Length: 374
Image 1: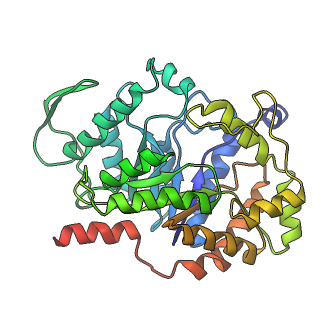
Image 2 (image 1 turned 60 degrees about the horizontal axis):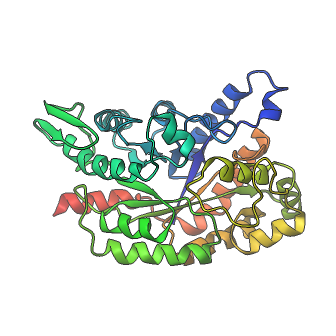
Image 3 (image 1 turned 45 degrees about the vertical axis):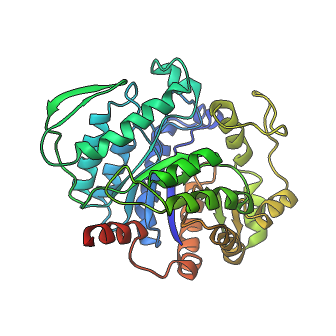
């Protein structure tokens, strides 16, 4: 199993109101943690793309963020989670160009995670009146982007965008091209990702035992993939919280005080493509912050990686058993102090990651190498 860090840029209003420059501080703290992730043994940094979602995510330009990470690292892979490749938000040619630029400047370390947006606030803000329409917009773009990366002239006369014969530059330096991923949330999208040969960015909320059913759907479909690109990226990435400290009780206690449930409330407030469980109240009512006992229950269910290294390793084991290929942690989607987040990432990286990731080669690189050999 591989491991990554997720940069989302959560900016809670109440802290920002009393902390001058807080939004910039959160951006820079995410940048520093992304750079340190390489030192701590993580293989990936993922950066989201969101627009108009106050507090939840102020990360609107992952390509800019990841270029800074690329300049300060040597080995870690850089993933977009996601680039919104629908034409009203980002013209697909621009998405192809930006991805190829990152691929070149990072010397082949960029991986293109894609999606269509996750809320009516975002879609309507860019003139997409019907949310279901975004599925067709994404379908058209994901099939065309790999064509834009090929040598020679590209043209397209489609329903959401058209391009007269033009050469798209630069071309990716990685061969055959950067790995392709897509955000997934339900059985239908997992199965579709598998059929298209795309890696899965699993943003479904639930315990690993529940995610296992979705991963099984994907793994069955990907065996019979007709890839939209030049190779199959058989990969499932899952996301969890992280608070790894030497003292498990200290970690449990801290987790009750860092606004983790407030962030969950924001998820359901803004991301109305997610089905809202009946236990989650309607905004502005909030999900209560957990008790220590509730935190321990979440850890035992494998939902959050909180506690000492052995607790966190047991959570990782549950994701591994579920079939996940990569686990990504997001300690900064809380108000955890930055220095504690650094300590938590370091401890997790030095004591937990080596138990599970013993392969120096990236899984996606193996699939690219196999494609070049055929």
